[in-house]
Image 1 (cartoon, one colour):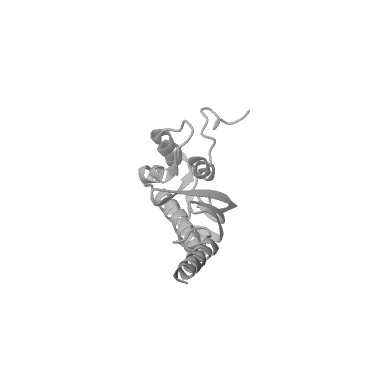
Image 2 (tube, one colour; image 1 turned 30 degrees about the horizontal axis):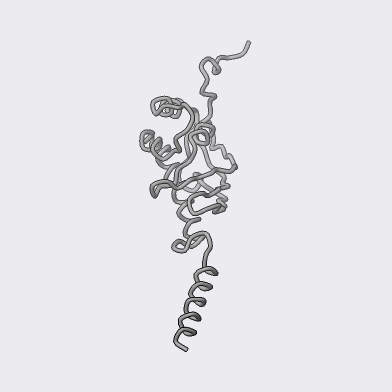
Length: 155
């Protein structure tokens, strides 16, 4: 009888843990979504405030872009995130895994006579507890081609 009770307890605990598996046993999906959105907002704030060195640390390493090149391109770029409510609108977050999220958002950018808006997808990856974005995503929002001689006027 005692063996049967232990067997039933083992089966119940096995089924209970198996059924509870989801994105993560510790962080609910909604919390992951909120964290990714908050991380994206922090990334845009670093850029807006001109804290490019810190922003570089919130990007995913890849490609051949040096820190100095990244900072220079952002500083020279025609756009930067807008302030306040214009910065980030219509945000939808899809959690792909515990450390990967896809954000579709409308980002407000200052740099011309009026705020420009760009709606697109951004992939964020959580590394060392921080949400990071690809450098290419930031540089494409900043504008400019980044190629030498490409800003020349065409005749």
